[in-house]
Image 1 (tube, rainbow, N blue to C red):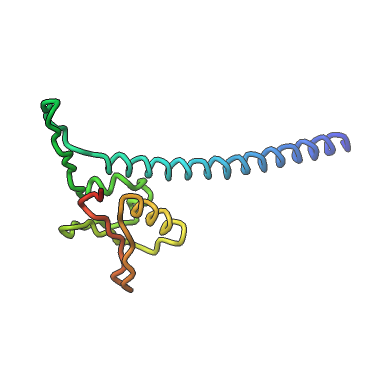
Image 2 (spheres, rainbow, N blue to C red):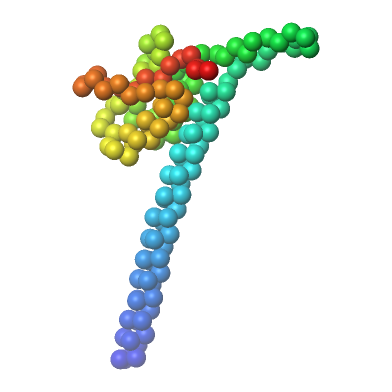
Length: 141
């Protein structure tokens, strides 16, 4: 009977070690998933910033100026991963899109949102209860 208890104890220890390794892998995979979400958001913002209506072909001697479509709320929402987008309200203010949090963001989410906004020429306006992110509708450059 003692050998059965010893065997079960060893097996329990092995299972616990395997469970710990699985937990470690989950943490690593969650970090990778979060990094991929950030990369995806950055790629979306790059894609949106490069959106331009197709131009009609011109003669080789005359170059038509590249006209960029102003951003709209949907364009701006696409820049954010779903988990962040769900934390935000978007409002068209004419010259810019105003982004306000629906709840406390925390430092990590705030930093991610700020990075995306700044990546497309936006900024953060610190104004107490009316603090918000602002993304210009017209692209710079």
